[in-house]
Image 1: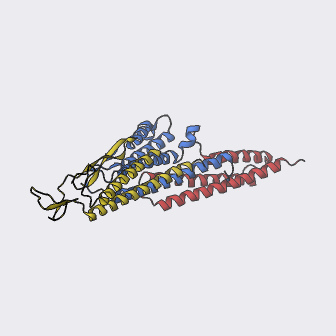
Image 2: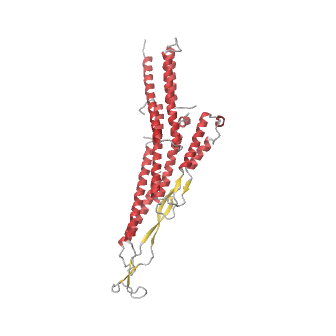
Image 3: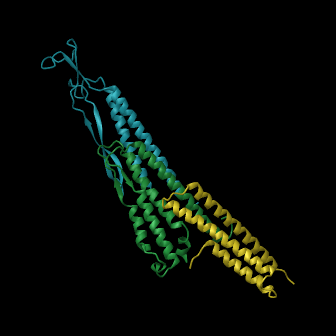
Length: 139
Length: 105
Length: 143
């Protein structure tokens, strides 16, 4: 029964990582220069969850973040020929590349993550009450 | 050998009845003693029946059959109260028996 | 005498129900944890299987109590007590996998709530049964 708490905790951790990733996406909504100083807009990231059979054992399914993937889609291009970062030549000449992050999508994702977080806390409360009732057999 | 909590009382009741019976050897059939013993053992039997039916209801509920949980729980509560009453009656009788035993003539 | 002391009531059935509810809770907690995991199949323990296995075990135990030497002579032709008890234990280990149809967070949370209520009821009955035995042994209503 105590390992059921581990299962819920793993979910809390995973959802927290997801929320952090989302807040990173929103924070970098207008970032057009990557960490090496190159003129590449920020690519949004997303988490991939995976069932973790070994955390708790006994057929209990915990969850872990398998990886944090980067969305390699095309960035958003806006025609701004006078912008210092506009492309000089090629297909996107005169266009500036912006990160393709839809704020509404990110917010909905964050809401879902916090809903899942609350649901897991609710499950932890139920687990704790089961353990407490077990103790009441003796006392 | 089936042990039920109420059968412990049946044995105590029997011991009581043996003690009382020894003092009333004159009339064994319809003496107040045997009436009393009859009353006591029927009381024990009744409590036993209440307990048994409460247990059966619990088993039906655990097996998923169509019984109302409120009925099962009140049945258990009634059985519990009947049992407590029996315990108290038995304790009072034991107390009275000890007192009578301690009378020095 | 000692095993009979605990067998002649609803006690063993209630204990099994408590255990089953706890195991099921752990599985359902895993479902809620994996609500957003892609390709995850929700797991469950079958309440119906457990309850019917428990019913058989109770019948076997009654038959054995009536006639300890041979349950069969009292007209009982079901499973033996040992076999029935084994079945109950098995039903607590067989994990069912759902086939991915609409089993969402809300369903899981509801199942957890129902399971918890089963657990609480069984716990209350368990405490009641132990209390009865304690009252009888200590010859007093204030255990």
